[in-house]
Image (cartoon, rainbow, N blue to C red; front, side):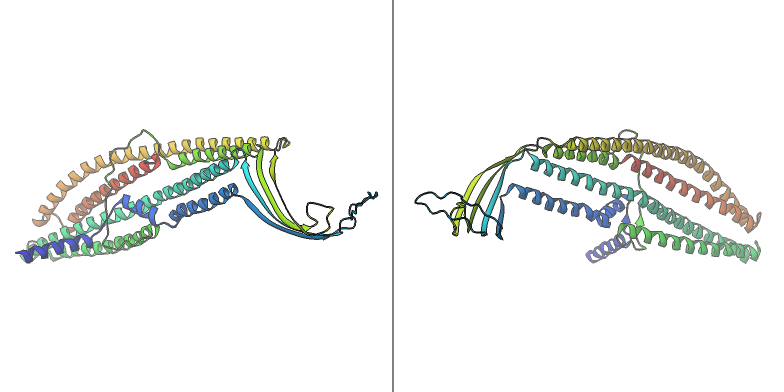
Length: 418
């Protein structure tokens, strides 16, 4: 008994693995994880980290090693000779080597402003990637629901095939006992071959679209994978979470950070410096010998007038912000049109499916009557096939409309940013 239980568990496990379920949400996640563009988010973060580290280095002392040797045509001379003193003119060839250290003490927060700008640029760039990946979901929707539709058509064709085979057996029994003509079974068998052709075509189309979807998701989707029909409920009209809206806001914040950098570029700066060196002459120009020397001090600078350069730069940034605002307004208008179209499509499909259900109910009654009439020789196989095909055409129409409704709901949800 225990051995039998193990065998059953093994078979169930194998069945689950052989028929893996792929949902629409799984497809979104696979694209966000595997699509090459997704790596750009991490790369942008690494790039910004390096740039931030570079900017922060400006807070550290700057150390320069300098050396020079030169010959000059004239040197300072002394026309008067003082008693009991010997004053030699400096040499025309002079040499100097020094180590200079400069430490920024105050710059009015300009470094912090540049760091804030880099952070704003990173957020905007990463959001651009999010927008591109989000737009990828529209292509996923089209491929996913196309494969799903062919999957449903294949199931219906197999059901049609099975039902027709059962009908052929009954007709062959009637032929055997002379109640029906032999041609009655042949007509149904020809239709059965036609179904086989349709299955070949549907499976080929499904394979092609499944491979396209797999390429888009950067993952393997074998023939045993079953696409799950999304259970998307009634649409919600409140709120809009499209990533493009956040991108517009982040771009405006980036421009504000750029303004702050411009403002900080004209603030006074204070730095300390130190210099130690060796040269001929040293700091004492009257001593014609190699000497070591040093000096320390503070240095302040302030660009008090820039001819309105910063003002014009800020004006350009203000115009850029206005441009972004107009782009945002245009996007909202187009997005509202997209939502309205998706809403109308949903309402149309719901009404169509309601009619499909009524048609299908009538077709089911007709085919039952036709099957009984064929069995009793009241109608021919051709007449039966006419009603039989109409029934499955109605079933296919119903499935097509159900898939179209699910696609319309998915597109509406996508347009809302949910």
